[in-house]
Length: 159
Ligand SMILES: [Zn+2]
Image (cartoon, rainbow, N blue to C red; front, side):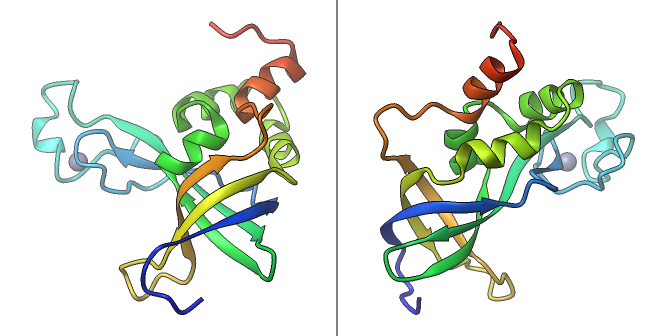
């Protein structure tokens, strides 16, 4: 796809990389942090005397294989769009997955084959290799976010 403008198309999810759904960022400035849970943001830790600062949170970053009517793409889906698929925050999902084995694998199974209207854009950063799915709209009227199906699957009541 050579177009510079974002393109909207109907796509089917073929596969989701379930090995790595999210990454840690500083909760203040959203800079990416190392995966080590004890590491804190160098830029915000000057405020470390205040425990509200220097916290971390997780954001979604999904690598997906999708098919349009003519092509198969690999796209990357960041937090805002991924929340539509998951129906929860990356932190909530991360906590859920800690206590529910195979939750990540099951998410890919749940979402595979679903059709979406996706807006794909070329990353501004020329080094980024994948298109970004900036907007994701489920097409099936009975679509429910993955976390809802997961809770049913694992017999968990939503709080
Ligand atoms: Zn920070």
